[in-house]
Length: 225
Length: 324
Ligand SMILES: Nc1ncnc2c1ncn2[C@@H]1O[C@H](COP(=O)(O)OP(=O)(O)OP(=O)(O)O)[C@@H](O)[C@H]1O
Ligand SMILES: [Mg+2]
Image 1 (tube, helix red, strand yellow):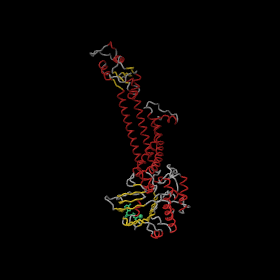
Image 2 (cartoon, helix red, strand yellow):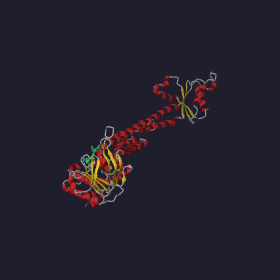
Image 3 (cartoon, rainbow over the protein chains, first blue to last red):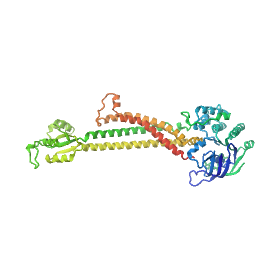
Image 4 (spheres, rainbow over the protein chains, first blue to last red):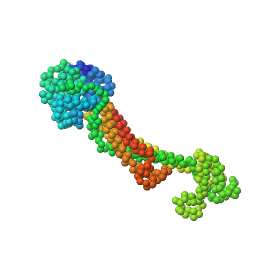
C-alpha cells in the first residue's frame, strides 16, 4: 500500500541561501496493493518528483508518506535500505552503471540483497534473454543503443520481483512492439500483486492500455481516477 | 517466462563474487598515488619508531649503570694531610690515603679504588697527548668509587671529606647520566610525537583519497544506495580498497626502512653497550637489529591497514549520512 497524506516537497536550495519553491503541494491519494496506475501531466508538473518520493530518493518536506505499509516520515533511516529493496525503479535516464556489463548491472540488486551467486547467474541470464538481450550479456552500457539500455534498466528494476514498481517514461526509447511487451510484463506483475506506477507522455500507449491515472499539474493533484 | 525467472527466496548471507567492483573503485581509488604516500608515511613511522625504541633503550642502559658510581678527585695527593686546624698531620699520611680511609669508613660504599697513573694518562691522552706522564703536571689523584646503596647522601659525604682534606671534589656520575637520560627521554618524546603526526597525516591522506573517490563515484553510490545498499555495504567497498592500498604502502615503507634501520642500529650499538657488529656478513647485521624493531616493522603494514580501514569506514559513513 502507498499513501500520500497532504504531502509537500521542496528541494533543498543549492548554493544560495533561502528556500527554494515547493514543487509538490498537498498531494493526497492511496494506492492499494497490486494496482496499476498511470501518472500523467505536462512536462515539469512534478511527475518525477512524485516518483522520487515513492522510491525514497527524497523525503517529503511536509505531510505523511506511507510506502509498502511503512510510515517513511517516522521510520529510522537504517530501516530504509530493506524497504528500498522491495521497490523496483526504471529511471527516466536509465542510470546504469557505466563500468559494469549488462549482466552485472542487472545482477546488482540481487547481489546487494545477498542472493546466492548461482541463482543470480540463472535469473539474470533468463531475464536478459526475456528483454531480448541474451546475446548482449557482456556488453557495457555505452556499447548499447538507447532502447537496449532502457531494456537493461527495466530488467534491473524487475529482477528482484519488487512489491512496488515505479517507472519513469519506460518506453521513451522503445519501438511499439517492445513497448507492448513491456506493458504485458507490467500488467502481469500487477496481477501477481506488485503495485505499478508508470509516468509517461506517450498518449497512444495510454489509450491502448486504459487504466486509472494520477493527474498532476503545476505540482498539484488534479485528478485520480 | 518472467515469473519463473525471478521467484527467489531471500537469504541473509552475502555471496557477492570477490572482485565485483560495482562502485568502480579500482579507478576511483587508484593504485597510483595512495600506496606511495602511505609508503612514505610508513618509512617515516619506521624511523620514528626506531628512534623511540633506541632512545628508550639508551636511557635504560645509562640509568642502570649510573646510580652506583662516583669519582673523587684529590688535588696534591702526595701532600701530607692536615689536622682540623690546618696544620700538617704526619700521622694521617698523605692526603690521598686520608681520603681513601674516610671513604672506606663510610657506610654504603662498596669499593674505592685509586686509578693508577697509567690509567689516568689513558684518560687524559685525548687532551694532553701520549706524553702526559712526562709533562710533570700536578695531576690530581682520581678515586673511582662504587656505591652499594645508590641513594647514599653524596652531598654530606662531599662536605665531610672537604673538611678533612680541603679541595677534594666529589662528582656523581648520576648528574651526567641524569642529563643524558633526560636528553634520551626528550628524544623519545619527540619520536613519539613524530609517530603520532605520521599516523595523523596518513589518516588525512587516506581520508582525502576516500573523499575524492566518493565525489568521483557520487552517481554510482546514489544508484547503489537507491537499490537498497546499506551504509555498511558501501563503506565496506571503500574500506576494502583503502585497506588493500594502505597495506601495500605500509609493507613497502617497512621494506625501504629496513636498510636504514640496520645502519642506524650499527651506529648506535656502542652507545647501547652492545658490541659493534663486526664484519661477519649480512646475517650478523640483521641479528644486530633489536627484536622490538623487527616487531614494529612487521606492525607497520598492520598499522597502515588499520588506519586505511578505519579512516575509509568513518569518512564514507559520515558522507553517506547526507543521503535519505
Ligand atoms: N533536483 C531538483 N532540484 C530543484 N528543483 C527540481 C529538482 N528536480 C526537479 N525540480 C523542479 O521540480 C519541478 C518538477 O520537476 P519534475 O522533474 O518532477 O517534472 P516532471 O513532471 O517529471 O517533468 P518531465 O515530464 O519533463 O520529466 C520542476 O519545476 C523542476 O524544475
Ligand atoms: Mg520527469
